[in-house]
Image (cartoon, rainbow, N blue to C red; front, side, top):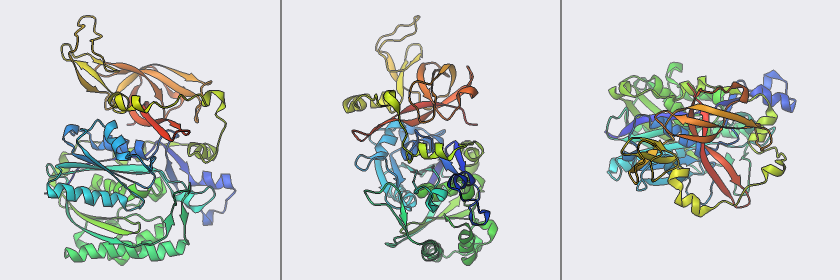
Amino acid sequence: MVGITSYGAYIPLYRIARMTIYQALGWLNPASLLPGEKAVANFDEDSITMAAAAAVDCLHGVEREKVDGLFFATTTTPYKERQNAGIIATALDLRHEARTADFTTSLKAGTGALISAYDAVSSGSAKSVMVCAADCRLGKPGGYQEEIYGDGAAALLLGKDKVIASIEGTFSLTYDFSDVWRAQEDKFNRSWEDRWIRDEGYGKFIGEAISGLMKKYSLAPKDIAKLVFPCVYTGAHASIGKKLGFGAGQIQNHMFTEIGHTGAAYPLMILVAALEEANPGDKIIVASYGNGSDAVLLQVTENIKKLKERRGIKKHLASKKDIGLYEKYVTFREVLGIDTGGRGDEVAPTQMTILWRERKMLLGLCGTKCKSCGTPQYPAQEICANPKCGAVNQMEDYRFSDKTGHLFTYTGDILAFSPSPPAIYGMVNFDGGGRWLFDLTDCELDALQVGMPVELSLRRKFHDANRGVHVYFWKATPFRA
């Protein structure tokens, strides 16, 4: 049996109400406005950091040393030529023998990566493969895409042991259908006419893929507990399922009014939400949309009852903060350029040799732990810092990225540049030992307290635009329940 053995998700802390966007642009006719809000990545987040966060959620209770591969699906790769999946695998401290690959340029890249991971495990070439999908797309200010695009990520672990939802079959369609596109030189997505996309695209391709899957495996609508698929047109979303013969209770909530359209991650995020509510024996169909459609049939097993608790979709939806200002949103997305001041431009050239040699320490946040007395240290050391020990060359690798801690001291810096001032940093004492100074993010200075619990989150430390380098490191965030 091959299928999903674990799942995880990530939704950024910040949301922006669509009415906030409309008010900033002077659009105040309620009859023509979309309801709800959408998820907004912080200024130091992108598709890589969100995918890593979803993967951490997915890896809860999993031995990372047994993961044989990581496939990353996105249409918003920070790098066009440098493997993005490799960055995530290094940050997660996976084995360097793990196979990595990027799946991109299509919204169905997430399900494409899922099917490829299924094929790899089924063939025996890998025992366990992680699939991460994340997107952080930009719509032109004042346009429809700005209203609908949200940010988020999902992660699924595939294997043969302790399967919570077996993959029973797949069906794929490919069409060179130009509805939404972004060329090499474009910053914002472009699109064709809405009715064309809704009726000729979503209205036909998703239904054709689901019908093809059901015919291939001799299924009727009554056999399916949940039908999962994305659609930016909420009215069309309901009608697609209805035309296929599914009742309203069988169609999984699209979450469009809560998070927006999260690109390649969207169908997998909806799938995670369905798995959170699933019961053993349930059959689930998940279908994607983008240059055709992939449809995947899953059957939930008894092991879903044994899965350790994680944040998933439910807890991330409940943990949120309104960004408040449209101007802050467009600043975070670098749509609105702002003066960084003299201090903001003082970025030393990125030393690629150091990033390589110290990748385990910098990207993987790995230190050492003394074999003699058990004292953890960061960064890695050869001599134990414990004055009662002092052992030399008795160290083993110790990963801090998945450890929680408590804020020992903190400060707000109003002189250093930050897109979300003030810049905040503080000393973190890790549970189990070890401490380090980290930037703090996803928080307000007035809400911090000495001793409060914090956790680590991979973030974009800075962007060396002159050399085209994204530098990633871990930051501390207040613990999200």
